[in-house]
Amino acid sequence: YIKSRGLVGIVRDVEYTFIPPLLLCITLFMLMVEHISCMKVVFVHVAAVGVGAEQGRPVHSAILLEWLVNMPILLFLAGHIALNRPLPDVLRPIAVTNIYMIIGWSAYFIPVEPIRWAFIATAFCLFSWASHSMAHWVVLFRSTARVDIPARNLRCGLTIVSIVIFFMYGIVYLASVM
Image 1 (cartoon, rainbow, N blue to C red):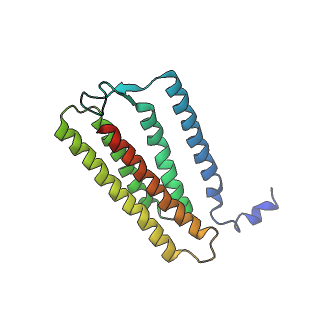
Image 2: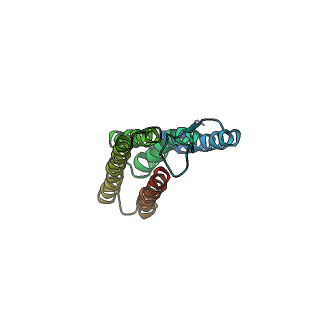
Image 3: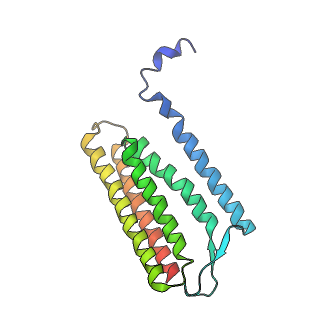
């Protein structure tokens, strides 16, 4: 231990070496809790009349709870850890993402169609803003990061792929409320 203390200064941001594995463990734990709760059929609510094709369709709120925990972790890992963005730049899209997920979930329970669609439109506008911010992380990273940084293109590509996957989830959500 004493001999290795001198090497700590060589490893850049050594305090961050335990954070990504810890956050991934939390993410996996939340996925496990979600799957167990879905097997036991807990946290299921009934959508308002007129939402979706079937009457009284279930809304699995456990999935929302899992996303409210895991999405901030994934965005933190992508923005702050992988792309070296300052924490305030990462926290804004994280907060907006949680807000638009809650607004989208709330739309399931609004029986008045114009109000429900206003909630859905608001959620998609917030999604667009958060996605634009994430794309901006990539632009800033590419302009400021050293060319020889490990996995430089992979870091950017994974962030862009995340935006595309979140968009596909949005399309699935939109189909579920029609």
